[in-house]
Length: 249
Image 1: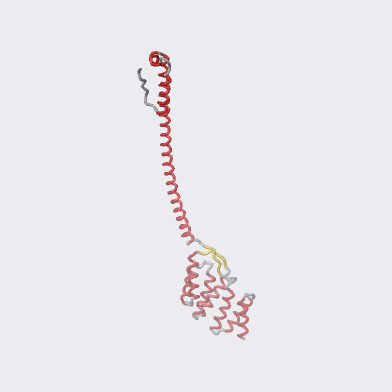
Image 2: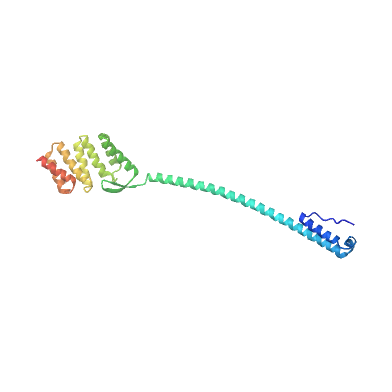
């Protein structure tokens, strides 16, 4: 009996084909009819065609799976690339935000800032505030000559600053401390002329009277004290002026 040779197929398909051949061989007269009967030949050919189709399906399925794996690997690579790009962009954004914050900080160093000094509110450049505070610190530390020079320089450099009335007041005090009484009187009078409603104005008038007393000009001091009481009657300086007038009599 001749042996039928099948094309290479998967193990499952081979088992199916083998079972089919065995079943055919078990039929009476199968050895002789298998190659002579036309129907049997067609059945074998059909079986082989179906086996080939099944094998082709397996191959197509394996190819599709391989393509899906390749696509998945490619997609994973794209995701990894996107994550890397996002991380880079995030770092750039953080750096940009830091640079922007630093730029804003630098700009603020040149922008006017709201200030409130001696009851007056105004806008001032940071440089003005630093210069005024530095001069005031010199006065508070007892460096009267340096404070006098610093306040003079401030007024010359910032004639329109909101700090000027306060700078005039402390300049007059610095001059008084260095026994420059005439200069102190002139400085305090300038404050009263330019800013009569300033919070320091009553104290400036009292300081004029004190300077006049130091110069032994008692009549002028008495007149200054009386004017102070008239113009600023509710001020604490007016109370001090009344006490001074009582002692001068």
